[in-house]
Image 1 (cartoon, helix red, strand yellow):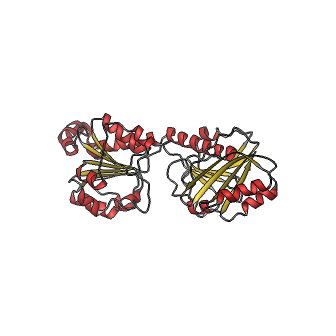
Image 2: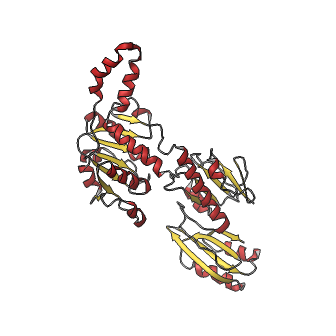
Image 3: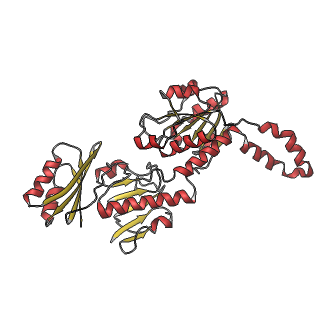
Length: 389
């Protein structure tokens, strides 16, 4: 029986996908085979020797120590696309919030609650203070065209906007999801210079940290509106506040409030609600659970952030070996030579690599003794060996 630890409140609908005859699931489990987590910060957490996988019920994995996991052969999964519709909907809402001063108008209307019968006349007198513009016919720049960015781009097209997209790493699968009406920007600077609205959907990396700064703001049109539901650190907050004050940026909608951003006219702080829907939490939990099950039961890896995708459907062989190793020459030769030495017949084999790591799935016949497993584990560069029956 596999032991699964949960570190946050995970959707019961997702956890129900763990069959109770094969899995023990609880928050207090010691030395689990896998962990399912949402936002719990794991960097200071000690891992038991049985831990094989961590699944994030969501997209971001900044709360997980990826380097330490990779060194110990622990596969880290996320749930890309499971929360995409939830984020897309709130981005579309933010396009409207940034165009029509709905938030300011609502706050002002609440402030006149004691005016009694004068409320209707006051509303008519002051409503022009909250007038805005329509998004139809305006140009939206979408930076990052993954699951969320593509959905935002397509929905904006449906709302009558002109959409320009930029993603130097656009995958073939993502491209298929895009409307043919989405125009491709020749470069980031070109996009920044021509659009009225910008929404960003890229991961936080060293190369993207504070990608929105004074230099980038200077390239933009006067009065541009910026929407950020990816990561707060993509934006230099001090530069943003200055750009807001100078009118270069008319509105900034962020899902990542910091104290310095609060109370600044033109900044709409949203309390990290991007994926906060019941449907999104369920979808992410189901995807995370299914990834863990496929890995623990079959050794397959899908949607990992530190290991290569590697899926081999078992058609023959009575046992399966999975081996994670450093991506260096002659590893396959060393592995197969040990199996041959003990007359272990290989029926099927798949090897994939990603950066500094590689992963192997090997279906075999024969008695995999402790001696064989020990020799495989002692190959220099091997970080994990599992036998799945």
